[in-house]
Length: 126
Image 1 (cartoon, one colour):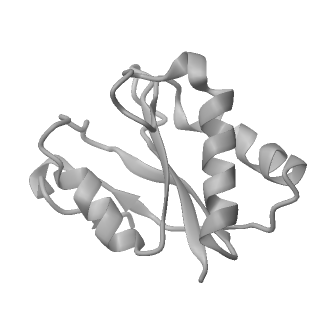
Image 2: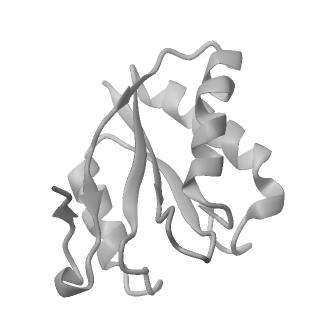
């Protein structure tokens, strides 16, 4: 079953913070992240990039390789996939790492931004 690899972040924020992850149900996963009360997510947090891989194992391999690559930039030792880098820096590494691993992938567009007036929902960008 196809699996999605995502990079969340705000490229315009002066504080570098991004999240990577995999899911098979993107809307549900994004809603969960954006409504999670443990983190105060900034206004303007967006799905910066999104890739489709043919199965969960390939997506997990990509995620783990990138987490190892960015190990020195983890935002918090307790969190798995929050990385103290701008999303563009992470996105620049996704395709080369996927190609090195021999993974099949396709980048797709998914305009989704979290705005303050929708605290527990996401709003598709126009």
